[in-house]
Length: 80
Image (cartoon, rainbow, N blue to C red; front, side, top):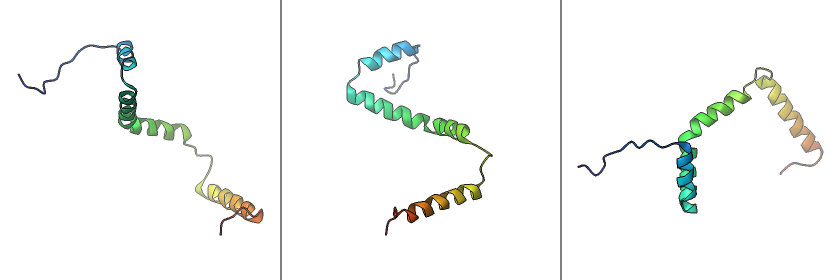
């Protein structure tokens, strides 16, 4: 029998959560990092979908940024 043989074991979310509760803290952190990496693209696409807007143009954003920069400069909140 091959050492790398995979088995499919039916397991539900509650069973997984019970297993996670039994893990060492560093293993939980590692698992969290792996989950973040494996779901990053989907989470990023969801973020983009929720923040997309046709209400502002790039020119309007640029104008607002320049106005804020000028106001900060006028108040002496600039960096030399």
